[in-house]
Image 1 (cartoon, rainbow, N blue to C red):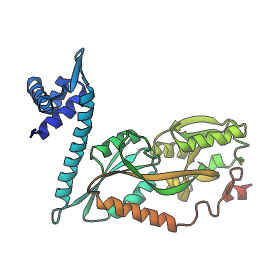
Image 2 (image 1 turned 45 degrees about the horizontal axis):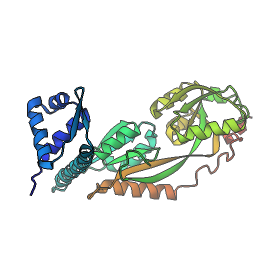
Image 3 (image 1 turned 90 degrees about the vertical axis):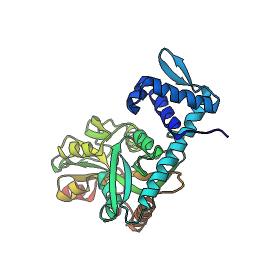
Image 4 (image 1 turned 30 degrees about the vertical axis):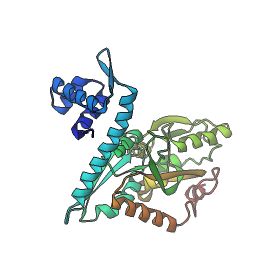
Length: 320
């Protein structure tokens, strides 16, 4: 029976990630010669060469790519085992590790996490970043769930489970000073200053299609892939910001921003993304179920507001 050393697999993952034996050895605090011996022992136990050497860089062989997939799976299982055992001890503090995509509404993030944050038995850890970075953390077990406004379809080829949590309307918002000039959308938006999400956003693409179909070209003064920065730009009165109202709910309630146009047909979906695991963090399942139930019971999005893209909101209609 072949003996497989768990440490050998760990060292192999570092070498594969760095593509360089010396850098991997520095990260592992080993000498390059000692790490080379560990790699050779793994190759001998598997009966395969895992790397090809090319100008000082190590490149995975076909056998190495297969071995890396297994090593990643074994690593995730090990992390899951340790975490499950630690958190299942009597009286142990339960930890919820969340990856939050930077383009996600922080108000929605807080709404999702609030029950866990107010639980004396739970510690919440949030890691912010891009979708790809957040999914990489999910794949390695660094986080239990990723919250995003984009699905994970096709990202990285992992067995993602994408849960649609809420469907939010999308509006143009502006400061009261900017909103004082009545504009119809899209007819009156040629040259109008707008602040948009990045081109990766489905909402951005749909907005541009509405403008193109009307032969209108707004003036894009900024495109922002971070919701906190987008809120700041909107508050400074630089232009009309394209956002779900939930993103700027506090500013609208305080009168710092006005929802000028609710855009018919534009919706943003918020997702919780998980990975197939033997033992899922039970806190994630309860939070997902709670937010889905809350959104299902909420009044239909857009009730009481303008329902056509060409119509202003009621507040603007009164000013006119």
